[in-house]
Image 1: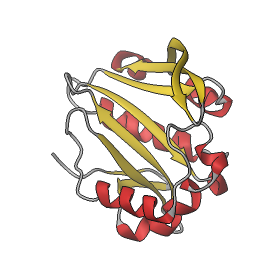
Image 2: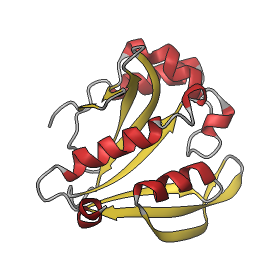
Image 3: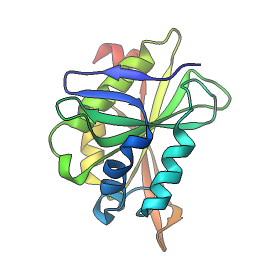
Length: 182
């Protein structure tokens, strides 16, 4: 297992570090950012605990979510985070997720980061499939999935109780052969 580092033109995807706390808390404490997420706004203490729980995680552990920093190279600042969870029973399958700071949305960073993650995952020998679940009301994320070439596989109706109400999700997926053909 290894620590992850992926570089794009504008971004570096890497393990979280304690120095990311202020930037991480800045967007994870914003209700608009967490509106469609499975988590609620973070206090500073919760943000610190979360980062501390991720510090030594390495890529490749089956069944474990690992959260990675999305750093903007030009500023060295954390502008978001993304997660990868390899399937517990088959590490050729992964679920991914992404959160981008409200101050950095609509600049193409989410798409750039997700494409880099897909390049990384599908660059692994025999890697087969990537999925992502999206809140059915999150139009921006739905459009992002479609723009990258993800295919909608499922619509789960009121499958999740969070933030005091039932929510619905779409599941999107992409196979290696679909990635290679895009």
